[in-house]
Image 1 (cartoon, protein in one colour):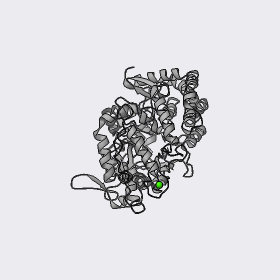
Image 2 (cartoon, protein in one colour; image 1 turned 30 degrees about the horizontal axis):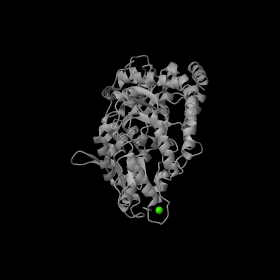
Image 3 (tube, rainbow, N blue to C red; image 1 turned 90 degrees about the vertical axis):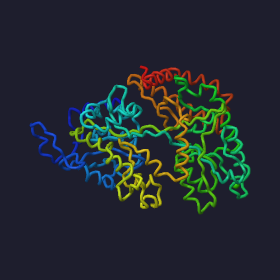
Length: 530
Ligand code: CA
């Protein structure tokens, strides 16, 4: 694949088969006279209308130039984007591979995996943006300079910036949510540590809090269980992946806590405390289990509290309450999930007018551009109250969708490089979620320091180009093996105690020590120690 890509790029570079960038109507582009920067009105980026092609597909939503916000962006900047992914194409990875194989790169490219974008950059498919940012993008430059975490996220280990991220600077993402009405009914207090949690979940299982006379409750569930097999191992401060402790990268399955965690999780699963379909139920788990008055507790985003509104009629008294993270077996309270910058977009080597594009990208880091992408259009989707705070209009609040879903349906909060407004998170939350988010925000000690982004249950580090291939190869042999073993142990298909020694030997044979070494090097670079 990589080799093929390199070849394709090499051919493309000499044969101009890449699509042309920008249907520019600007006649002065072809003259030899030096361009004198002209002061343009308002937020215009170009005097004439320009259109650029874009490859981006976020949450199965290929970029759609008809979205009202992007029409508004076009009106204000004179820059329009044309998505190249058909609306029927829901597989982002396949579409990306297809584009690379075709050799026809869009002018602007965004993709879910920042490592793949950096690789495309190193192979010549994306251009380094460092100089363009210095010269033409003062707002991007300011945000990168003010936020080392964002800058680190944007910068490849070869020193180049190939993609402008969505600059998220808040910490809180997922929180613990429990059925407060069930606790009240059974006269229980919210659990504070893993032993209390076991007792509460057992009561949820056995004491019929939904009151239908059946033992049908599913005490602990998760809509991300299908992609994060080990979501609940963090209750025992462990996981099936890498982690950092005291400056050292460890692979948690080799550590003591893993034995404690897997043994307990298998026991909980066997006793029916964990959703029997946790590995397979998928993203709809929350809708199904809360809507059916069956689910008791989960670890999820602030949107978990929205069911208090949507289910109020169907399930009288229904209340999902956010609680502090559960202390582990050693009494330590930590929240592993933490928000981090999100991958954004870059400029491809076939773009003929990168200067205009970087100026356009800079727009989303200005107050006006960031407001459009975070909040929508003033007077339509939000207003500013007498205290100067932005509030969403009834059109957004009463749309029948969640705030974020509504905004995404008009093109806001898309996965582009932009300055994220933390106030958006609180404004879009319900009152009860807002309090919980504030509680998590106020307890910065619950979060770890010097942690690389922790996404979907694993650390994400950047690897040196010379290590990357070796690392990916090692992990392609290790990760599926660990997931498979873990699943077998939890489901009770195989005996953990009995398997563990050979499991460790297998990991060694598959090169886990070298993988740890590569991660340590990557982490040292992350910390700036190398
Ligand atoms: Ca029941």
